[in-house]
Length: 396
Ligand code: HSE
Image (cartoon, rainbow, N blue to C red; front, side):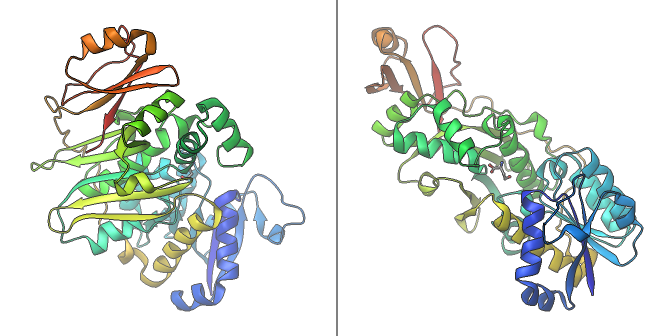
């Protein structure tokens, strides 16, 4: 019997218990022995829940039980989750997690600790939910020199942007709707301000480069500044707006990362990614472009990736670890001097001034009382400077 414990009985933790239960024949046969959840750690009790009897409140009950060989950490955060993960790995228990914040901050250290203790620290579910992107990068694409990873990595913001697009609605009312539908958290800051995407693109950049990319240092702009006029102007010009996390790698292995809303030509595969779906667009020097698409959030989709890691940990222990990355900071790519095209938004009353300021730019016209232009290749344009209300870079 392979005894598993789940840390945190929230959305993903409940999904893990359900996947192990409903797909028990498949999970057990792939693992080489019967897999069973022995404990669930949570602060709360869950009266009436089918797993009520497995709930424990003291982590030491689990850490000190030699029968438990694998932990699914679905608590989130870098406080107790970090402490409990370290304690589990030190006891030789493999940890499989969906906790992107912890992986982005302490992944290198935790992988090292796992290796030293003959167990594994696995985190397929931390990026792209159920999309198997980490395994793809570390197995199928190992003959490639990856030059860029660009991803729609956050379901909440993608839902909001596509609903604004479909319904011509404003940001605030669409966010409210996303909260009512359970797609956005009561406190949506980490999603809408891009911090969740920054953690995920950092993990992808870590894997791409083999070095540490601090998610706190990723230049990050969220979607709260996107007005319905931006969406309408972009659409009129043949673009969609998507929140992207992008990691670029130069020939000298330096890496730059960014999170921001970008303009995507409507014909680009990422522009067709709607609602809560995620997609990761990977460019390799031999293979060219590939895209990986699927549910980037949600209980069962994310839990499926956690349980796939459980199976790997059960079958291969520490030898299943990703090539990983070290804790040496990645060399920063110097993007100074690079020029991009931008969509610039102004109040319609300032259109003459805008034309004079951006002479030669392509005019989109007026939508929702706002005037839009598309510049030629230019240095970064700042907002809040005179008549410029918003600037969105074109991804190309
Ligand atoms: N809040 C995240 C999202 C959940 O909206 O994508 C998955 O990490």
